[in-house]
Amino acid sequence: MGREIRSRLSNRLLKKPFVTQRTPVLPPTDRESVPKPAVSTDSLSDPVANRARRRIFRRLIPFVFILYIIAYLDRANVAFAKMPMSADLGFSEAVFGLGAGIFYAGYILLEIPGALIVERWSAKIWMSRIMITWGLCTVWVGLIHTANQFYLTRCLLGIAEGGFFPGIVVYLSHWFTKHDRARAMAGFTMAAPAALVVGAPISALILQLNALGLAGWRWMFILEGLPAVALGVAILFFLTDNPQQAQWLEADEREWISFRLDEEKQELRRGGHLTIWLGLRQRNVLFLALACAFANLSMFAYLLWLPSTIRNASGLSGALSTICSALPFALAMITIPIVGRSSDRTGRRKLHTIIPLVLAACFFLLSTIPGLPFPVVLLLLCCTGAATFSWGVSFWVIPTLILGESTAAASVGFINMVNSVGSFLGPTVVGYLLSKNFTHREVVTFLSSCFLISATLVAAVRARRNSVL
Image (cartoon, rainbow, N blue to C red; front, side, top):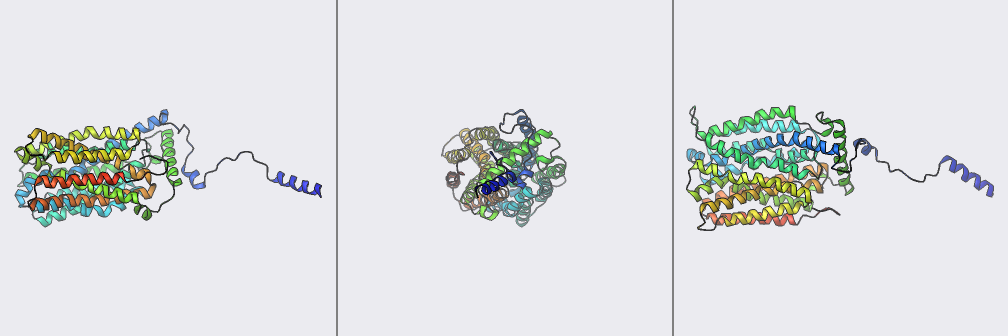
């Protein structure tokens, strides 16, 4: 009997050898999606890593920077046209506020679909469509004659541009690791104040035109809309959807960035899988959406009434007030990259969002103190503008760090959709309050409180387990 048992055990061992160490095996889908890198992927200081990061940054950021300059200028140039357009067409403060804000009523329709299209289909085709249609709609704004036409063209412009910003946020997450994402966002979002720095003097010059029977403000919309159409065509030849298709990268650089990005995706998946709709109902996503809405409510009201505020405080002409309104955005171009680098270095995304929001509220409120000389008022407005544009650098990195892939894409679209509600309400509410004879100080107090509410909501966002935000 003992001999028979030993014989059976011996046969089993011969059929199934004893293994002293098991090598972990990835599931088939993971083995296919993660190419084995030919270089070290552990260090960001690896020579291949450094080459890849530099080349990606130099290729993509200047181009999306230019795209956002045109986008922001076509969205915000209505602020420069406010005084001559309102005088020419007889628009009241309420009409102008509704027309400026209704842009976001159309804008919200394509926020989630636009982000998902970039995530799952093609960024370059979608962005090309967006730019061509919004350029044509901007030209159309220059041809209006009535308030209803103003509302219609601004709404169509919002629909045309819908999905651009969340699409770019998602697109950058396909190219930049979490260690570089705030710096990439800084390079992209710096285009917003740059558009206003460049746009203010250019718009002021165009407003002086009076050719072919068209007023200067009409030429402003027409001439500033055409570059978007040209860039929309250029996108098809310049943008690349993902690193695997990037022939402008060396093979080892493609391997490195693909491996690192897929490694980050696997890390997010290990934290648990969320469906798109479950992700949209998460506490963090709702807090971020509301925070963005309150911040942008104040931000766009500040932006659209800045030339008027400067003119009322200084007594300068409309052209000089428009040029002075570029100064806050020039300062923002200095603070945005500083905040981005600090955010990536420390990893403290929430802190780098909250501090600028609190500072924006304080500086804006201080600018309304009675009896301040105009240079002091202008300095406080400049500090407000710098803080107003700096909070978003870290804010838009947060969703890509706490959610994965399609869930993050949909959440970015959802956050920007709710944000658009705030952007719509800001000019509309301010226009209404001013038409009801609320004082400038009372209106600014309301807007400053919205900045503080936004900071509180961001503070309530929770980090993933064993991570820091």
